[in-house]
Length: 116
Image 1 (cartoon, helix red, strand yellow):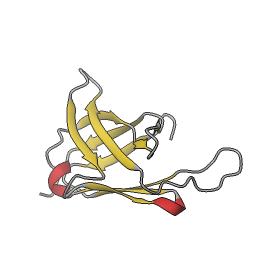
Image 2: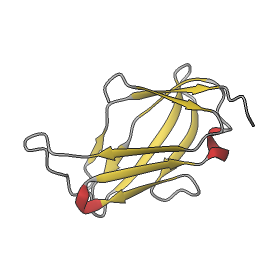
Image 3: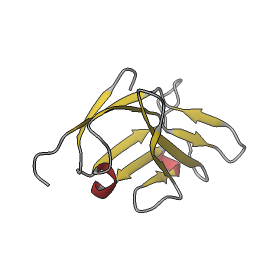
């Protein structure tokens, strides 16, 4: 996702899947017993507008550990609170041994919604 920009309309549900694979053989990384979190941050001033994790609700992150899949679900009520503009984020995984790995930073462009 290097230099990726995800466009999302304010007030829409955001569903995103992340596949964690080993660079050497493209097989899934075992994410069993891992936790995940994501902060959505302003590109200006670094203010955190939303934090989502494996323990948050109703927006949440779920992990299919053996298959190396991380699913993000941000509810429409939560995206409705984001002002139109650009934000940055990454997905951070913490493994049971304390090792922390993050995706590349990627960007979200929130577009003003017409229908409310």
